[in-house]
Image 1 (cartoon, helix red, strand yellow):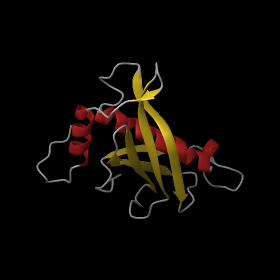
Image 2 (cartoon, one colour):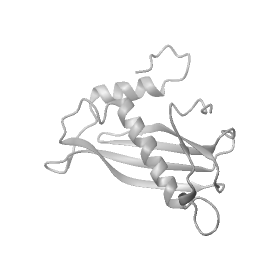
Image 3 (tube, helix red, strand yellow):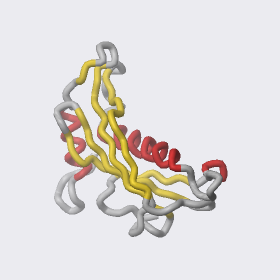
Image 4 (cartoon, helix red, strand yellow):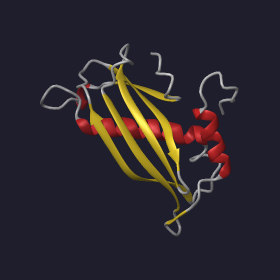
Length: 149
């Protein structure tokens, strides 16, 4: 399944029968779980989860979802994730969910903000320069000369 060019991180899932609700479509809570998987894949790509001391990491501060079209079984969905912005201690992300072969018609769009914290003190910590550089490389438009990390 091809991804929209503006989402550099994409994860794909089969829809399971048990994800359906009584109304015959995927329960809205599943979209947040799909966002989470895409967010973790993005964090791995930018080095937030790897190469860090175990006591520093991201905590989800907020998340939202706009449900655009229902998803039904059987389907295969892809979830794209991208960094929308980087603050001093936070990373803002955007998501899209689409069904196989229908990338031009998303089923949902979402956002989230994660804050980097020192888990021992629960204090915010600045986004490291190397993470900022990886985000810049990951989000660089295709053909811009930037290398993907």
